[in-house]
Length: 294
Image 1 (cartoon, rainbow, N blue to C red):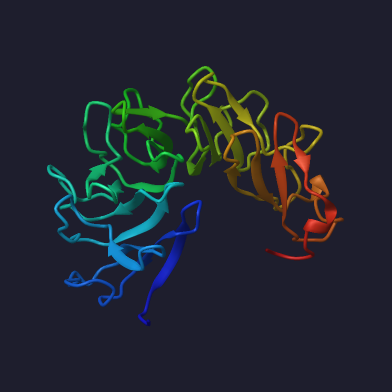
Image 2 (cartoon, rainbow, N blue to C red):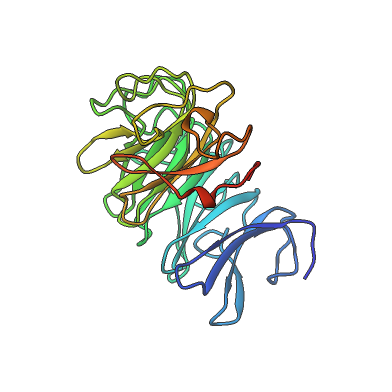
């Protein structure tokens, strides 16, 4: 044990596979890159392996971070500044990669449907239960045609189809006019939630705050979910709405907020609470809310 940084654990559904970030050089043999790497601890096998490697097992030549693991523990998705994890990586940007623990294959996720590597940094990702669909945020402008809003957007990469789809759009496919971040994806990969300061993703968004939206990739419907049970947006002074987390079946989105006009915590100044958002938002029971920051 020991080391200066070991953090960001993410766990498979059965709790047997744990991916994490570490700069320790004694977890696996041959770790000499002096960089943050992604490791997996397999509790059943009693093994620790490094997954921020190329398909031949060569270690990354840049730092890797922010892992997420699929429900069955087979796939690990992570971001990396490395330029040697896949062939043809021109480097210079943080990309998203997926490592298959069963086959050892590492592939680039932050690419267009035509195979063009993203021309901007890509960030925090989320993975469907089977590991096929990965949602991520990116400042790249070449992942889909017509991305000209000069904002960080949300995309979904479908590995089996080889397709990349822009998710942070309105129901009429209008590009968001604000920055989008922190995606979450349902188990089947059909529903994506994300945080955005855009005011044009739904009609009537006038609170000039970050909101949480839900995009249905099957129907193409984008819905504002960070509203109270009466459908009102947060408008109180200094209100903040933080990242949402979509449920495995995609029907619920948990939203963190300190909006006092929603009366989430009996009027306690600065308190944060959780709202469960559905087609009609449902507040969690009062006894689940604290009296301060969480």
